[in-house]
Length: 285
Ligand code: SAM
Image 1 (cartoon, helix red, strand yellow):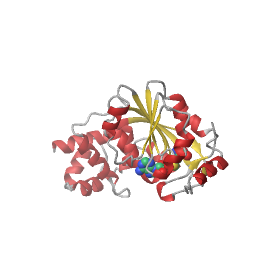
Image 2 (cartoon, rainbow, N blue to C red):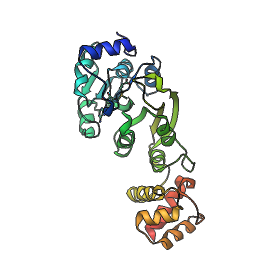
Image 3 (cartoon, helix red, strand yellow):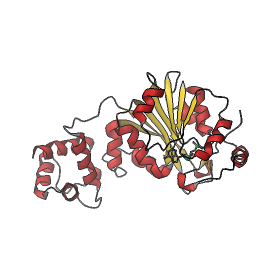
Image 4 (cartoon, helix red, strand yellow):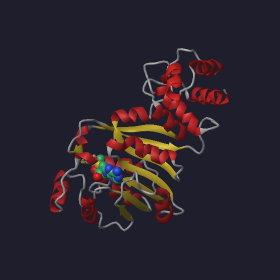
């Protein structure tokens, strides 16, 4: 098998098929030979697991997934890469490339058809321009996924894996913690890619919870409150929740007080339990 993290191999296979890098699709391909085996080793793969990849590029991570998983479903939007992948992954009979935009694919139907009765684990070097939508797609939609091990921009990794109630936290942090345990696995410098992007990266792992850490009567309203609270980070939670939800300030103040919180508290200081309490009390008011 060819070394797909070798710059000369990447350039030659792309050249043979007339493919150039498309920056708009986030095409920065891994050239550090240690990163993909490390990612795949951390991705909970075995014979009964279907690995789901977003964006195989020339197939460097796909090959490592194929060695460890029963099956690999890999979504690639750029059809110019299909003949490249036919060539680079020819030795694997457990890989299926799906030429679709991951954000538009009918995932429940595809999983039902192609990996029925298998566990599903997501593992990918994500196209960074759609990191949050992809992560939220797998977290929110009650898909039968056990874990998500992905490479993202370092700043996104810090935010996604921050503790709720800490300075790095945001609405997406609360959403991640609601659905999953998160950990930042390792740092990957920008020089590990061809072409090198402007930013460094990190690999994170999100392991989905069996049930959320807090009980909320209405998940949709809970996330509305969270989004509203973080919508104006410099303002107090009272002001931003009131403005974001269109609810009178006095009601929000009452909810904060009943939840045992200071009027001047900011969203970044609120814990998951605080958000759940505020949601419950506001729903009652
Ligand atoms: N896995 C390869 C690697 O690590 O070298 C390539 C990763 S590259 C950062 C991102 C890949 O995602 C590219 O192959 C790109 O064409 C693909 N991609 C971009 N947007 C996509 C989308 N909406 N759906 C599916 N694939 C997409």
